[in-house]
Length: 366
Picture 1 (cartoon, rainbow, N blue to C red):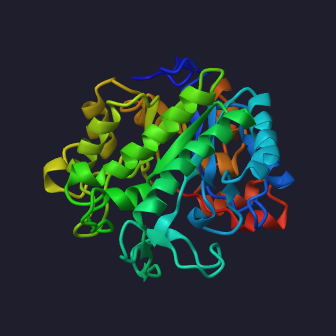
Picture 2 (cartoon, one colour):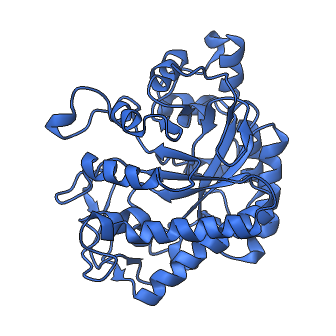
């Protein structure tokens, strides 16, 4: 079992002081144009003091990739001053600073795109949350738009390097664009980007190549690249755990520093009957077999949860608990468990220091 207090050195050469991370969570604190606010800087500063690394909420790599108002933006050079301030604030507290880069695809809200039609792998509507509400039908991306988006991920990585971040996390989870290209539900293309698993992986591979090319060209220091993925979809057809095993096998062959599985509960059991014997996290950890570190997440509230998660991962990402208890990691490290904020998220939020009206919009996204 992994000791949460142990440091770890990634393949790229970056060393983090412990095995606890703050995962990416949407807070809707940026201005309408993606400019980072003072409140946002304060929010991250409060939560960067104990963890080994902070992964910011999703930052869109193109204007058409914006998912919702109040989202971070890394699509323009004009975003660099705010991004630089954010990276500096996180690192000043002793944590490594990773920015998550993404494109929302068909999950973009109309008010985020100023009424423009969202784009995706194919013209297939998505579903929000529990599946009860469908998104607007997107437009299938042209080959030229795909190539432009691939390049945009590389340009975003260049900006992350220039802003002083220690790494980027590519967001391939939570039904956003990279997952849309990999899913047989959302990708019904008949060109080189659609078809079997190998062809549906093509877009992801090109994005990875673009990001690594930017690191190789522009990074003047060790720089981490991670990848986040969702292990299952609840649609038929949809991504199965076996599809994810194939995805993981491909990702393991790249220079990625870590893999990050998106789960609402770290001990969640798969849907498929043949994978009921243990948790999804355990199956993935077994599949990876130590070839790259795995970051687990979902429902970590106390010391027992940290141990339970780290039985099947190299890193434990702590999200909602840090929202309601910014000094939770320090309490864990010093054995002051009795001082930890307890209860579920809805009950505990009243104990936070969120006094600005912006905080009413906090939305954890795993």
